[in-house]
Image (cartoon, rainbow, N blue to C red; front, side, top):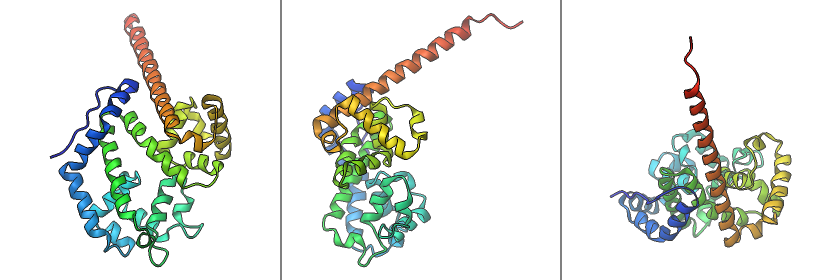
Length: 267
């Protein structure tokens, strides 16, 4: 039986309700037949993965692995994913190291078939971690079918933990923010940075987003920003800013409609 999450409203009030019921909702979701079937299948097949071909030629295994890294949309891009996995991250010229989206680098790092033995063979907890992340991301996708903002808000805390744990310096962490679309979206919105911000040179973006974080949150130290209370503050500010933008857009559309309706008929 499939599971449909309960997301009563968007915005901050919806977030408070979702957070209050999150543990029970996720437990019910994880017990649903599709999720249990996928994860059990993945556990049974993980030990037999020897090559990139083994991953991309098994759609169910590929679905779990891509889902764990927030890359479910690439399920049909088999040639592209095979190249990512085959080249890995050992060489600076590998495709994953050239892409601005750092999620591909994380995928290629954990499932690196350019080394012997392949990277996934040397990570004892990778199979359980991948299955856990897949379940979390699948739940977020389900929530996202009702509210894209709630999907971003749900994933933000986990993405922040991963980001901080995978970087050694604060400047590197901010480059990771800019290179991880879901995290970037939350920060950019919460900090009130316009859409045009993404058109700037990446070094300029890197400086400006840190400066804005200092102004808005009082710090640009990613270790501090990744603490649970600060993550919650950033998430709430993101949702409030999205609500404000939605109301503003709705008011503008309503005003335009009134003006159009008030125009005299053409002669």
